[in-house]
Image 1: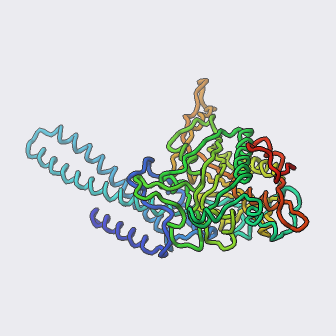
Image 2: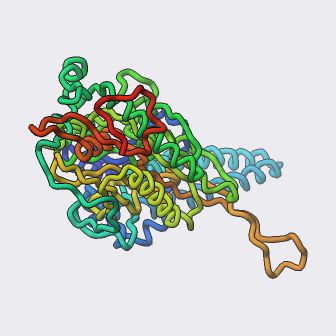
Image 3: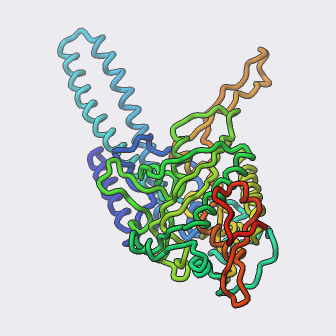
Length: 494
């Protein structure tokens, strides 16, 4: 097949493949925009090609919407990319030797013939470069759709297949509609949903008086615990490049919506394309992008405070009531970059930090090992923490921790240099094998998502008079050092 026909064939196959994706479902990947400031993601095509069966089962177990034949297309396109790269290298070498022959030839007719051959070779090389670039772009687009691998201990199935790893705090109090946080908050003058609906819309809110002070106390309390465990505080931007958000794998799933626009808030007419951050994980991950760290500087642990914006709120019926699922909230986020062989241990450290935070609040909560269909794109393994919310009459997620292994680092170019290991076969002291570069592992976890913690504390800590009317609120004593306001007649520290 000629180089030109090969290029046409590749582009036709790529167009066909992209056209069979289910209508309404956006690719996880999009073309890396021209405004991207980072190099293109570095994915391990060879490892993917050698584990097609596993990758296929993995996507199926996670209910990830891969088109039929996606992995076979990746394998085929990778083979073509290698063949084209080999041909290009060979022709470039031939051009180099041809140049040497032209310079060494004294006979004018022979030299002219070589010059013509060099011109033809230059055109072939140019066409091969274009075809290779097209093939590499198609290969990247196809491969970026794959989710991360899955930890072998992760439960299989939907949300209700989660495994309870541990339970903490007092025994859950009985469920009661009278403890509904929205009604309790209104009765105590803590929330104003009606004004927020006028100013912005549904699923927005004002925190008033003690509720606003409670958010501030929760934020500083969670940060204080993280600092105690060696995390470094970062105040993050709340606006990020869309490219960075995509590289982090952040597209919050909404199974009831086919519109990608319902997932994130984009800033109109921004160039480069900017979005409101869905979590501080995104700017924290971006802070480490395109950097190489000495191995002895890892793990690098940071705790960030930012606003999270979720346009997908408002699609789950009862979950939209009050503060449970809202469009904007304050969030304290844990993030770490570590060596590839330490991420599982660090995930347990994250879990311990979160457990300490929530045990200090005196709430009933449990830790779940989340099943495959709840892992999203980037998580290798994910723990959720759920608190008992008696007004809602159910457990509700207040936190999560994810080990993303090298999923984000390959897209964000976060690497570390392994220390040179001693060479036992070397007779010279001080000599050893050269250091190598490896992609780091990244982890993230929620230290405090304030609306749901406020909800939990209100529904568990509300006090009633003899007629069942809310008259006050019991709050955990650990928050008192972080309380900025004057004493309140509705609060009692316990």
